[in-house]
Image (cartoon, rainbow, N blue to C red; front, side, top):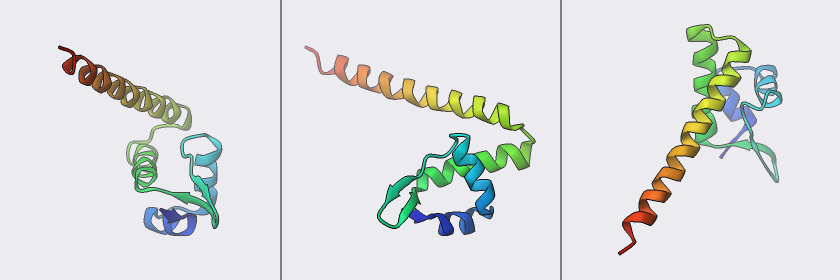
Length: 91
């Protein structure tokens, strides 16, 4: 887990930007004893957000849509994997 300061430094964004991403629900840092903490998965998601905004020029509304679709695909893959595992274990 990374502190918010480590996260911002590694990502190269300021605290205000990260705060907006959290308020938009794009990032959901965990709370630990020292305060908010982010995982490597959060880092990968933040890099995607940064690339969508800065690299491709996607607007904020569309970033929310894209992240929602990615989350849905990930959820569907998890369900499909579980279904395949359940069906493969049946006689």
